Image 1: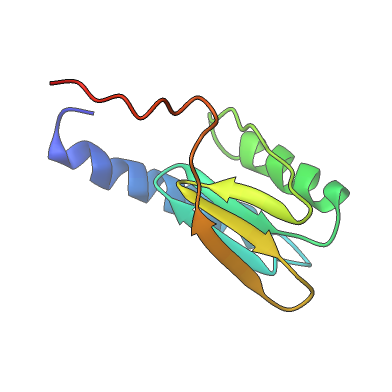
Image 2 (image 1 turned 180 degrees about the vertical axis):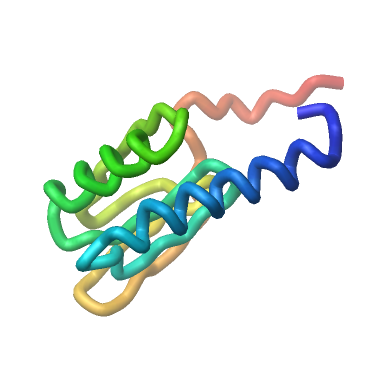
Length: 103
């Protein structure tokens, strides 16, 4: 994205889609977090997740992908590990990280 205004339009568009999608739900997710176009949801079951994904795609021109994690899930560069009542965090490094840097 080249122009600084593009980020503003991305946030407006995503906010529009979020409001339209989540306001229609009887049971909203227990956690909803978004950074630009990466979204983290905590829902009760996989059917709910697929329903939200389908509604997002119907309300927008986005193609959504999902990654299920029942107790561990990477989100951005953070590894989330859930217990019964807590979510612990740690730094997440991808398996293909070679620690090599360019000069």
